[in-house]
Image (cartoon, rainbow, N blue to C red; front, side, top):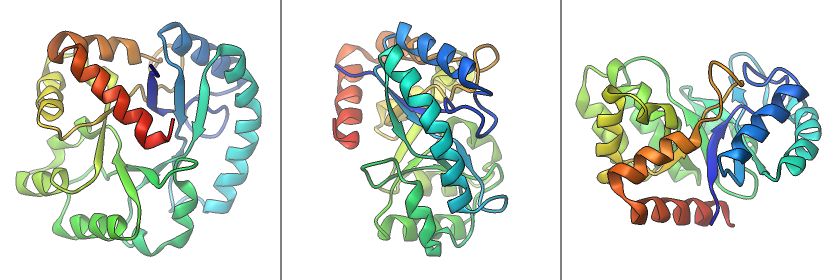
Length: 232
């Protein structure tokens, strides 16, 4: 059975995650020690700060460093991006290059503000355009949503929701995300690891909470689904 970390900033020197090869090695070793078999490398992409082609060139250099380190640790890497949402994103053809390799999956970071019906329509256009959306760390956004109907409209779309493991480690967000997992509105777990100290790999801790609260069958089903969408 695979253990997949769906959100990580493991690539060195490309964003606010791993600063260099030594940190990447340490993060990979920490992940492997927890039982992680696959990690999706998702460096930040901001369309207002970068072009897709420049981003991909930097990402390729980081991948060349990270892949042999991952092989040493016994972890398989998939490569994608954490793409920040923007209005008109569905019309930006280059964004397709940010999908997780070999899939139509795009890890999308929604804006840290109140969402609007316009945002929901943009998500619908992305979905209709062939993107299989994964919304990153959904637990961070409810506090910004005064209109809970908009939040529910997003969660009702045919997309996937990724939760950070750390959200399961404290009572406030844990209560909400467990409700989402139980209701089938949250689907995937990621560490969103950035370094080895303040934001380290912690997938196993989050999984332990899911096992305790929702049971072995639930966790196995989540893992089976994760394998299926990555084509393992």
